[in-house]
Image (cartoon, helix red, strand yellow):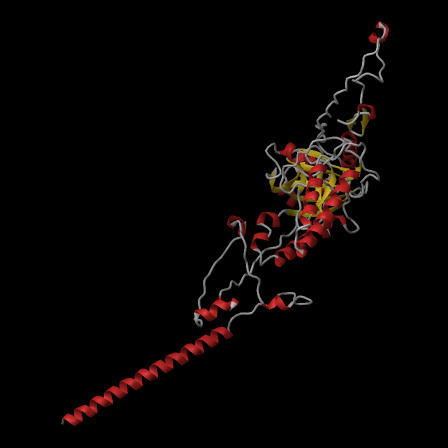
Length: 458
């Protein structure tokens, strides 16, 4: 009886052991099968269109690293998040696999449709038909310029190229910065015009030592150049020339101790600074603080109906019409920018970091092919007269154009050096020669008075 019980106990223990061994084996097989199926089902995204010549590193997605301004990382982008987990191998193995810890990023954006009719333009700018009563004769449904499509093709391409760097993506505001671009032609006068509806950013670039010998660039992106330029009229140096020359000296000094790789970068930067120095010694430029001009994308300056630097234009904001010229060329993926002078007139709070108009309610009318053959310092009276003429050729305006006043500060009067006073007769003292008078009238150059050469440099 005791032997029977011992035998039965042994059988029970064996059955339990076999059951546990079978359960462990089945569990292991199940986990292995699950892991293989999960790895096999992992989605692989094929970029569209495929690159012409893929590099060997294309199989490894770029890692996002460095310091970021987190509030700007998803600036204006609506973000939907979802976390998915799947069983993996050992932590030591998953740590070295870049695909074990990944984000599948898919961005959706709607490409806008341009405004085509006068009613659609009026919804954005209700004052437009009142300011230009005959504009409706020029606005046709088929008048959308190819520039609008090119603009948004460029925006989409830039988004696609920068998807691995979220901090470099266009914000929603800058993606939707253009309402429409229309090619207009007046049926009677045949005057051409390019109409843009957009917002307004601020351009504070430019410098001209002949008119303003002191610099006032405060924007971190400030450049002392504009696309509109002319040969210098005086020997007064550009106010930003000493700073640029100082930067060049620092680069040249750093090259003596730099590594070969660093030297290549320094030589390239030094060559660029030398070009800038030569340009500042030879040319003068518009000044965003004092001159009324607008900025167009680079793509708008190409093609049969292209806009050229120097073309006359008017800017419509609210009930006012501001004369301007095309003074600068900007990046191909942004529209809607004017000089600080125009921005201040529309909104006194505007500055290089605060746009005067954020909504797409500014209308830019650019008169194609009206640029002068030779350029010089802005002649504000000529600007007024030319823009009035072109506005009349498209049917006229119901309000007078804004009149710009010269706000360039007068040049400092040089301190005369003391000289011996010759004895003169009372008659000579009573009627000094105009050529020797320190208050002789300056010789006007274009719109801005420039002292005569006898006055000397400040």
